[in-house]
Length: 605
Image 1 (cartoon, one colour):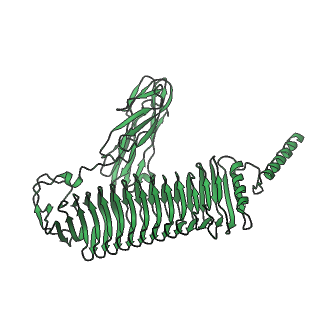
Image 2 (cartoon, helix red, strand yellow):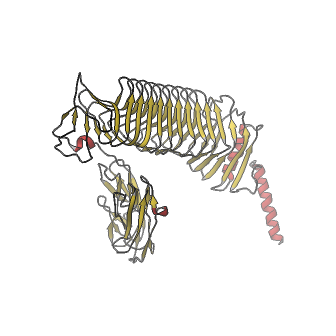
Image 3 (spheres, one colour):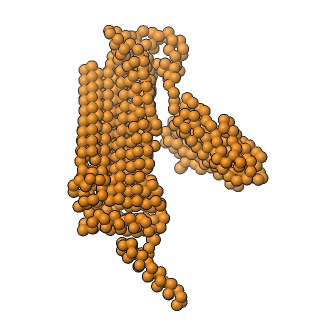
């Protein structure tokens, strides 16, 4: 008992000495605690605040949670924090500067750090950037980050995942940016991102990994942008109930290139201002699937796209004002499969085709002129997606009239068109021979094989109709398992494990599979599969079926996936289900070369 008591005294003394040495009076319990609270006060100077928070980051255990509380509204210097180990920093304090200090208000360098700004957290600067960070994950959950003044940025992030759930990021002033993200994924589940001032941007991303918007993105001022995605090769998803809004002349709601912009049901992009555009995506694809695009002003555009594709599946595009266009495109393919186009104003056009573009009107309604300029483009009406090579009847190239201009008025769901019949309308005119880019590649996560055996690993290209389907395979350790670079056939060489990687020729997309080589063959006894919740999915959603084998290291355990009704839901070689339309289908998973299988009935709503 004496020895135990003596050890406790020694430990307590050491903890007190360390706390005094490193000024860790804010630590509520022993040094190296897993949860630490740092409270800042109005009277504290920035150096003292920085030292106490930095000590908490430096001398706490890995994966510790450091919470900053309190308030300081008279900050006169920049705060710099850094950590090289995994930590979570929760900023619940109010921290603001009353004037320009000449540097970012807060800089956090921590590539393995999670940064949370919950309700009550407030970072606000005047004349400077508010928050500069490269934290791994940035969660804004009710807190606010604001910057006021010309050329200022509210939140600047590199190589991070930004996730907003309530809260706000705001910037006010000419040339200001609310969120400036480089090589980041940005998800706005709720809350708002706002910028106000001439030449301002609400959300600017360069080489984005993902943009998913369900909240509110707004920019106000001349030459402003709500969303600007530079060098974008990924999807921009404007989800249900999302709102993107622009107020100002010479401005853009969404500006992107190369990637795909998807607008879902009940999403909305609105523009008020002259010479502005709601959605522009050159060399990429724009898909309107239930959303609304509304513009108001002179010379405004709903959708603009050059050298790309536009699909209007459902929803509406409207333009109110003189010389405006619902859709204006050059050298692109436009497919009106559903939805509604409407314009109201002198010299306006529902669809305006420049250069050698083509518009295919399949279903839906259109009110307004449809114009072909330069005598190069084509507008055709088709009754279905199956277009015969020799078409007769009410289909053909638009009749050109005047000096290189052709147009007709469409005022009903089934318009009457004045045109010249075309004896040969090829499918490629409408669906084109444009390259469909690879967005993702998939394979199974792991595979067991016994020494001396071989099998072909499955691969799935997304989308499945991508133009270039070529892939190459490579083994990290060919001495354990080698793989045919062209066919994906893997050979077990000796006991151990290695990673094989499949890479697409288009876009260099990659997926990994861990290959385990065993000495002897292990017989399969059973199979278990994961299923969507309630065995149901909504249209447009995806779910990955994971097959678990008994025993876990059974040999040749490559699962085979099948959907009985692929028109309702399809499943690829990697087990990813895509729900296509309401109905039911049977999903079956077969265990490799055996006849053991599991299945369930999937309901798509």
